Amino acid sequence: MRLTRRSLLAATTAAAALPTASPASAATRRRRTGFENLAADGYAQLSGQRTGIVTNPTGVTRDVRHIVDVMHADDRVNLTAVFGPEHGFRGTAQAGGSEGRYDDPATGLPVYDTYLKSGRPLADIFTASGVDTVVFDIQDVGARFYTYIWTLYDCMEAAQLAGKRFVVLDRPNPVTGRAALGPVLHKEFATFVGRQPISQAHGMTVVELARLFNGEFLAAPVELDAVLMSGWKRSEWYDDSGLPWVPPSPNMPTPETALVYSGTCLFEGTNLSEGRGTTRPFELLGAEGVDGRWAEAANGLGLPGVRFREAYFAPTFSKFQGKTIGGVQVHVHDRDAYDPVRTGIALLVTAKKVWSGFAWRADNWIDKLTGSTLVRTMIDAGAGTDEVVAGWEEELAAFRRVRREYLVYR
View: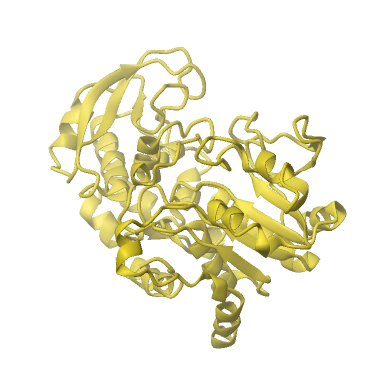
């Protein structure tokens, strides 16, 4: 069955093959997003189609116009609906919220809410919208528990159920596409912060993830097309792209946040603050009673590419709102050497050792974030960073072998 589905996938994504560049064009290669290539081709892939798009504030051009506004004003494309994810299409909602159903004041287009909807209920929304093709264009940040990739998965599944074509427009993985890192989700821990068994930092673009989802995880593959980027290399960071950074969510203000997020988001599963309510979410971590011993212990590990500063801060919302707390700030000085997931584990291990008040969230949210009980139980048993990391290496190696088949940028 897998071979059959992969053959089908190859056929339905043939347009995703990278063009062969001449030496001259390689020297002067021009970087383009999937949307830029779609528009440059006169929206040919959407010709004659009533089109709906799943997007959010990150769906912008280089001159920061929203692609919905651009497409709505262009007679070459028949854009008839917008589908908003968590935080909403225009980005007015905080974490765990959405904008609901409304008509967009700028374009008059109907906006449908996809947040926490999947399967047949989401398929019914696609059917009710009257679209022929669903397009996806959202900037991801490279971590399994960032929910937009599961919005992608849910929309692919729903489009298949509704008999709709699905087109993914690619954007860079802001923390490069060099490697998959961290534990792999176990299916019994599947939630909206991880639907399927991929690694904690996946090292893929959304087109590559869509290919993976279609070939490995969907019960029936959707009719999938992709519009690739031009000129993107797996080794590149977001600032190489020349694209403006638009926060994909309120607590992802900079590419530097994305750099640490796949590791330090694990503190959502503890009673320590992960920095929400500060200007440096996921870089600042702390709690009442934490002092300089934590930064000292973390620096003592000699982790590559990163240093830790004793820090004090007062979150304006979320954990410890309005209270001055102690902790660390994560300072990455060599992002090529830095391993965000190993660093996140090291910070959990050292926090538990130096602060007697350390506790996991009562709902064991850490298991949902890491994808199994392994991290929590090993740290509770006194394991060090290297032991915890070794605990997932076999499953990670197996995922990397599968992942390799779906990469389209070399």
